[in-house]
Image (cartoon, rainbow, N blue to C red; front, side):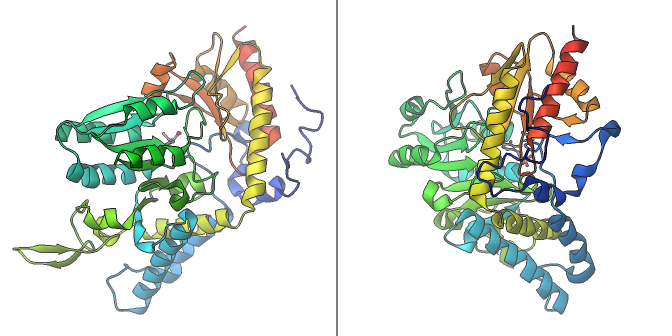
Length: 423
Ligand code: C6P
């Protein structure tokens, strides 16, 4: 099925703003020319991990052939070059998040690493028996389990703010759950299952008025939305490099300087100390206090280039392109008989989750795969959300800067094949 007469042509770029050239964009992503089973690839799984532009790929190997040495340790030429590259990427991350100080940027292994860091340091130092952590029903396991572990250790309670059936956060109910025992609100900026964009500024205002801190899980927001931690007013913001066109195994935790300074360290080891004796260790200042051991240097370098890539784009045009695709995909999927979209909040970004009458999402994913269409199926590491919605799995197509209307057409055509197979 072709939904729009122009949908499979090169005009098929979703160029709502007229400035976004998706074909030129796609040329920067070499993997998009792979042909699974001889079919054109429709990579609709960018929420799981994004593909990498040539600039990021090209930055990583030369680091090993030109700059590689350990950071902060050597007095020699290469160590200085490596340290410059590493700290240069920290400045880029500061700019990307609009953090007011570079010391507010901690490199982590990803969003999961960043949230665990806050739970084990800020959480352990500030929560006790009877205190509360408030999350929402739409959180990824990475923003649930670390808080459960913290609650088990400290005797604190986990509270959960509800969502509507369409996948919108019920802000009034969240507000009603915040009280003097609430020490921390941990909330996703964009849901990886529903695509819902949460009103973070409003949530931080409510939380701060009650004296609670706010951690934002930005894993799904960072590739799509301009992030300004000062405007959002949050205390912590976590993101993953691999979802924003960078490498795996690297991420960022933004933390307000005064909080990072007073937090205990995370792991012990090299680089996180100022001095060590058998009697006493003096810890380094933030952010180094949280970066024990030799870091993922080449990951940081790749992340820096991914940030350059993203900030070098016309973000308004990119947003228009991604919104056009979301609207096109929504309209297209709603025409598929027996299909129900999961997550229809008005503020939504780049995610199309759905279920199809009589077909398990895993079967959808397997049949689509043979058509060259890559989607994710299952619980998407958000089992409590799926239970809340009365589901155990969905099929999920997710979009990125290189996605096209033709890929959505391939998805819809693949769903016809699925329905033929299931009679
Ligand atoms: N979601 C998905 O397919 P890591 O694994 O640390 O890079 O990111 C964890 C994470 C945290 N929060 C949200 C909202 C996420 O979407 C993810 C990762 C992927 O939806 C893999 S499960």
